[in-house]
Length: 295
Ligand SMILES: C[S@@+](CC[C@H](N)C(=O)[O-])C[C@H]1O[C@@H](n2cnc3c(N)ncnc32)[C@H](O)[C@@H]1O
Image 1 (cartoon, rainbow, N blue to C red):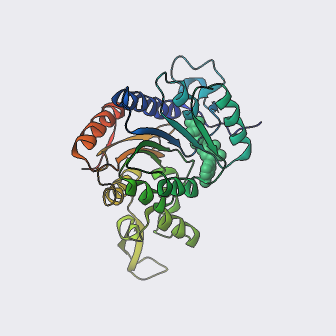
Image 2 (image 1 turned 60 degrees about the vertical axis):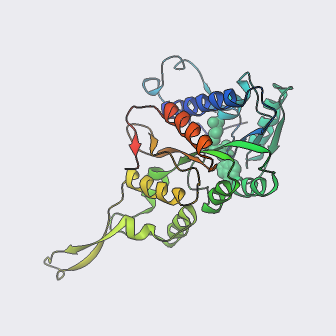
């Protein structure tokens, strides 16, 4: 089966961060009968990512490989186990590859949903008994696939830790024209991502335009957003629904120095102890390198 080639240095950084969090999370619940732990990978891929980058862009150790190990296989390969793994993948061929992956881990309880991530997550959020379960959800889209309602559904469970690869630069920033023009399909897409129309006043400003030979002076629009300010706005939006908060640091990711995505962490659990621990673990795995900050 042919799979899109997208593996690069930032893919490895993102997956290292997720894996470190999953390992730390499982340690917290090790040996406890309660709660049942679930890992939900909502854009699960196949378990393997074909490498797209050139040799120079790859971290040492994988420069001679064809594949990076993907999120689903990484989660399964950790010795300690979640009580359940739910992999959601829309592409049928990828879902079939996940069925093969599942066979490599016969002792683990794996469920594969060949469906859309938004409907899949929203349905899980409304059917699982969250008094008995705790989960880590990983949203790893290529672009603007994640709808605001999905984030709201996750937040409402009060039981999920979320890692979201938010496409601040690659999707949101690119959908805004330099003169503040936004095509109506992009406008719908932005409303869907943010669950609000307020982005317009945050990302687009009015500017005075000087007269020239052809037109008189007037007022026009200009894009004032950057991938970082777009992430700050998403941080505000998510903070309005995640009772445990959104980590004020995020990991900017992209190729060739570009800020394409922001890897963000949010905690739905309002319990002060749970929040404190989750934020401490997330902060440790996000690390202290060149990172974005909400304040
Ligand atoms: C960036 S890749 C995920 C990579 C994966 N997390 C890994 O580490 O191996 C995005 C995946 O999401 C799938 N996808 C795209 N749109 C989707 C949707 N609406 N619902 C579920 N899966 C989707 C694609 O087929 C692709 O496999």
